[in-house]
View (cartoon, rainbow, N blue to C red):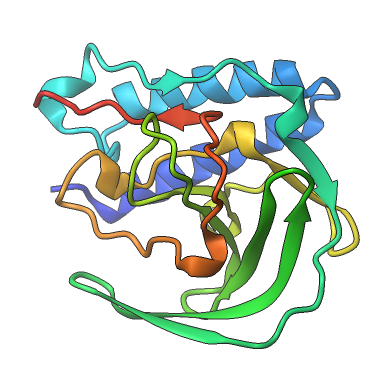
Length: 199
């Protein structure tokens, strides 16, 4: 069983990793640091979602950095919407849409505010690439430290940092996944790519 202190430590390490990402002026260097840091967490940390038997040899499949998939964009007004996502472990998880970002050449994604346990900005992503987890990925989840920076007028949305939710690694985890407003028609092979784990 994962303890509360292990989860706390995981979140602190994630937040510290993203702080290093935000402090790095070169996005490609920031991506290398993120990729290496996240790989170490997934492989070594006791709160990793990767099943224990697979951790020692686990390395996530992360696409090379593509500068064309980094955007700094305003969060545009969008019709208010509330989603209540039922989960088996956390009850109903409520989200409110707080805007939308337009990604040139790709389309738009809804930006959500998580209304429970402290709140945070959440930007999920689903795309039709056969290389990515079919349930979707996260680009931002600030309540858990995954924050690339920016403001409402200039939010950093770098799809190279799209990462798999914990439920992609193990059915022990339950994750709210992207809805229609967070689904792109174009494939996005950047970021973490899906590979089944032999546990």
